[in-house]
Amino acid sequence: MVNWTAEEKQAISTIWAKIDIEEVGAGALSRLLVVYPWTQRYFSNFGNLSSPQAIEGNPRVRNHGKKVLTSFGEAVKNLDNVKATFDKLSELHSDKLHVDPQNFRLLGDNLIIVLAATMGKDFTPEAQAAWQKLVGVVASALSRKYH
Amino acid sequence: MALSAADKCNVREFWEKLGENTKVYGTEALVRTFLCFPETKTYFPHFDLSRGSRQVQAHGKKVADALTLAVSHLDDLPASLSSLSELHAHRLKVDPINFKLLSHCLLVTLARHHPGNLNPEVHASLDKFLSYVASVLTSKYR
Image (cartoon, rainbow over all chains, first blue to last red; front, side, top):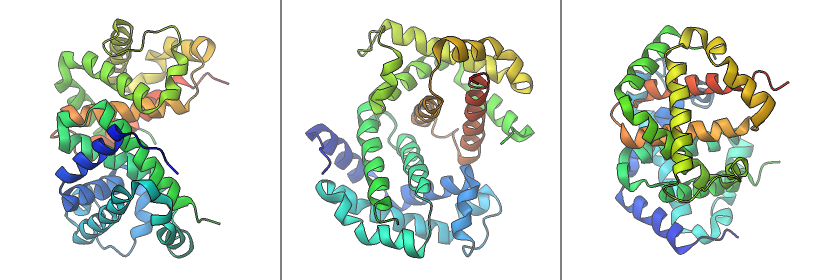
């Protein structure tokens, strides 16, 4: 089980409450696809990903970004049991989607950059530390059922 | 992952807008790195790492100035960073993973202060630039 301090839980929930899940989710996913173009390998059926503008304007990217971040919200709501929360999703990513877990770390770091851009001064070093811990825990939970 | 002409343009334009703030951002990047990735503190047992430390501020300025130098020599980075490469290889011996951690925290710092200018394309160019600097700094390790 992960040990969270009261301050870490506070930093996570305060920021989560302030963000627009669709905007931040879409922003994080499209940024991932632009900054690390090899991640596009998992989205060959998403239509036009031929340029940063095409990616940012692509409605499937947007919807998927929202879906991913909504799912991430399950971790935020279940900080004391993230592993169990993502059991099924871990199996899915391993057995059906065949996603290299390194991508979870790339997306997590990208999400943090988007949060910094969105929250500005509220994204203090302490807030970042709490979120780095969270994205690490999520990445680990999603990798756990790989075999 | 070599820097294209567009990457160099993005990096120069973005860095120029930072002006004198680079030193403050260098320091903030270090503070974030030490807090988020405590293992990085193992390279600074001789430093006061408390908030507001003068040593951390001086080191942040050093890092920022080196990056500014790198930005002005994008066409000959290995040559311009040669003495820093030697220093990291023969004296400092910082494990290469740590450059990634510092680069990430620098990007977080830049996103926090300049969200409007750090669009995905510029972010990609800066990420490539920082990776390139890191590979030059570790190029003489073995």
